[in-house]
Image 1 (tube, helix red, strand yellow):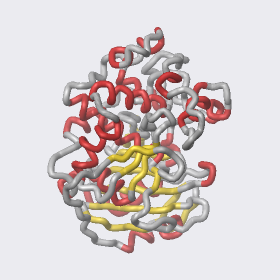
Image 2 (cartoon, one colour):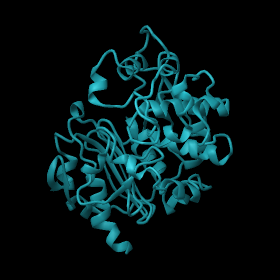
Image 3 (cartoon, one colour):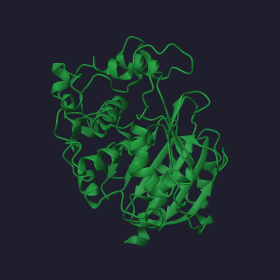
Image 4 (tube, helix red, strand yellow):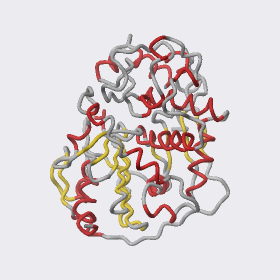
Length: 369
């Protein structure tokens, strides 16, 4: 990412690296996966030319049980794409608990510049749960329409070094309009996340990357810094353009498990977080979304809802968030397991995240019962 874009660093600080103990279990490679890439053992999926998995990491009970790099080196940094929305989701939760963000407040309470009638009825919680009803939903039709706000804003935000910046994301999104009442439909939209980024900066008085560094990255004993791509106007693209090493992705995921103390000296993800994430107030909204319900990629699994920027919350309490070109974070608090992976799927033509849940179900969930 730093080779193409201006970037902002999320610093790891000067503390000790949280070393990850290893207890490699080669039998995991023989687990039978059933995904859109086909039915095959995990070892075959890891080397599938269609899936193009670059790295995969499984951590159980605080120990690395699988670490594979089919397409990258262990010190390389790979984009999380939208899986990084969990950094934003957790940050908003932390600031909410600190009293800096009220999820029931309207957007224009924090961003007075967003003073249209449409924005005045959108609450922070609507952005956080992807039920804003604003007309920048990530459908293929909107992406491919050069006149649509989504297409225009993505184009401007991805201006590379020395390109004409055009308008800022902040100014472009002020003109967004509603297409449905807020709270009705789960419509996945990265601009919900981006506006939350603006709110984080406004209430904290700091750059978003510095807030993430202080509240999360420094706390978790990361081995290296992370990098947010910046728009040509210097806005961190919190909606998904973040990169780190795979092991640091795993350390972040561990913060949501009982093994959080293996990487952090204090609890970053509070117990109240899960009470809020498991709330089903917007459960019906998930099934009404347009091109956004990812439950079809998890065969024979019961999903509940989507909230706090997670794509799916399962009935058994597991959590999943995908990145656009085949990245993912799967957290199973009940079995104390996380699966994180990087991929570079050609033109986003294949989704295969079900393998992460299949690892948990076949290897660890039965043992936890």
